[in-house]
Image 1 (cartoon, rainbow, N blue to C red):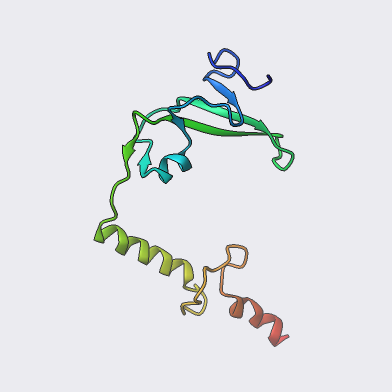
Image 2 (cartoon, one colour; image 1 turned 30 degrees about the horizontal axis):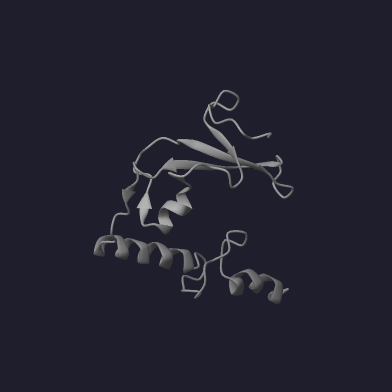
Length: 122
């Protein structure tokens, strides 16, 4: 098998093909689904697989040990407030200053109404 290297001799860390990682290891997304986080631990292994969509042709998912994972920190009032402010800033147009009601596209840098205004004036 191309990506099977459990001792980490070829890739530097233990490497497994898609869906063949041993029990006790999980990706960040899998940890989060269990209410856990890596908690500062180093990457324990990786999963590699071929992908035609990805530019380099090979995708990687890093794996963390479940026994070293920590519980997710609970959301405090201060964290909720900071998240609310950050999301409001993403919705506020820098040109007209009003809440657009959606996240301002990074490609435009302003709300759609402000981006279309020069085209309508011409």
